[in-house]
Length: 231
Image (cartoon, rainbow, N blue to C red; front, top):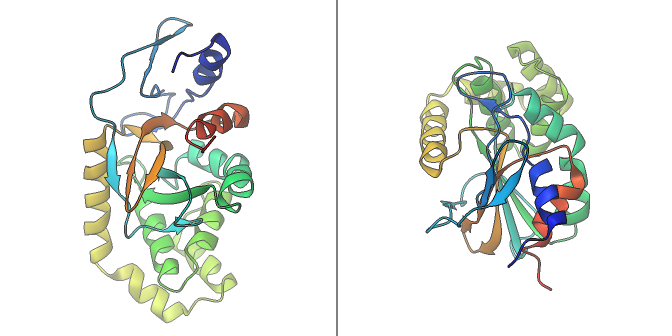
């Protein structure tokens, strides 16, 4: 599908600084199909095979019959993830997820330089085992990096979790192995920083589409999601 000048401008604005595994400075990841020059964006040949990932298992929001699937790779200690989670995700949820148009999948990508990202991801998973993953997810992103053990316990208490069960879950080694698998799978897909979205048409328990860094620009993200919605 030919891209208009307006589309190119919007896609260029979608390229936002992200947390990377090696530095905290901006590390943009172009959307698949867009190559960045100096101050310009140019169409590039699409990859031979679009990134593809199984989504059975991780936390999911939205209708299983939604026509579009979005997979977010995120790190709770990443300030860009916190900004996206507080400013953009609520609009995405209200406009597309809660209306049955988008199925949203959360995948952890705790970056090595973020010492508290793993404990936070485990806290969210353990809250999920008591049916409160998304509430813990939002609480962790809203605390702007306050990710101490005391903070996890305070959130758990506020959410009415069984504290003994929550603490025992957090101590189990199985979570570290799962995070290692998540990290390896994200890297195999070409995900280099957070937050990153994989956006594409729904296909059962598999998501396949474009990788893009997320943005504070709601209009640009909305246009990208709209490409996959039924006309």
